[in-house]
Length: 424
Image (cartoon, rainbow, N blue to C red; front, side, top):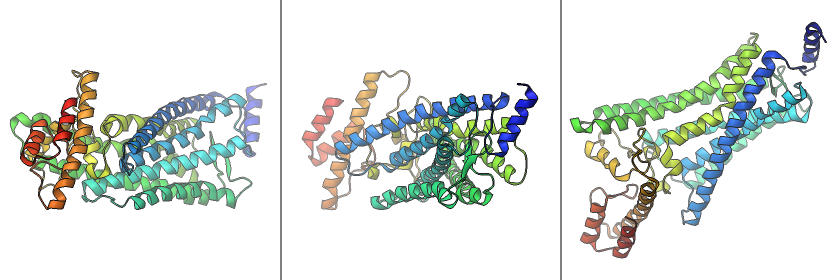
């Protein structure tokens, strides 16, 4: 069959919503999208399974509530997984050598892409809102039922947006849209209402929130009086600020090409298959890029010891810099003193290259036990209207000199202290 006949067939079948056969840039683009999809599927499945296992073990240890940051991350990873599954159907089109409309595969891909894309936007914004409230407003969502209602509400809205179009147009809502199946191009208003507007709003909100957080953290770092020997600590604090700004950069990098291309289509601009291949690859890469981003910048949230919500502040989940796993407690500008920043040295969990696995395990055990111990001390002091010694708070891990001083001065929890000492 000649190339002219193949082109004529592709043009003819395109009018029916089906594209066949798949040649040249289309096949190469679908292969790239499929590779990115399976990278995202494998990485998100691993992280989702690991986080789920951690949450189950935390519950078995008596932690009444799931940590909010871990819960949001778990849902974000699941949304990325849904989107990646949708794009993985590119292999189905490659096998059939056609993108066929009015098939179960086309409807499935359209629904999964819409639900995963919008869901990932929602939970990216939700993570930004939690961090913003803690870092900038110094407020936290303390009512756990409200937090659960927020998660349920996000998924309800997400699935509603992905499904309402099917109810309105059951015959042809999801059709071929370029190199994959999505909302039929003749329903531009539905595209805007059920997808575009939400992506644009969450993208704008995410960029604004993280920019404000970055500026706030940077100002706090600059307002601290640093001595010459504290240059390393300053670099660590600056690294935390830069880690915050990495999230909107990755998010915009993955979603903005799709927004530009789709808005161009709505205005009548012709978008080629190479551009669509880039759009699909970047959207599908959102999953594995999120996994890399969160595991590198927030290792303590993923691999650190269990932390109760009342003990955890936003910056406690960030890694300060490579080789330095310290984290910094949240402070307002007038509270941020050098002596308090140095306190981050006392609860490093992620360690440098010179440490071995035994050192890491010992430090994780010690920090986990110290958190439980300081919580017990707070519980004893509060009923007696006594202020704990300076530096002792439930959300901080203490050094051994402080522990010994506390136990000697108050004579309480001696047995617990001795048990913790065995892990030292």
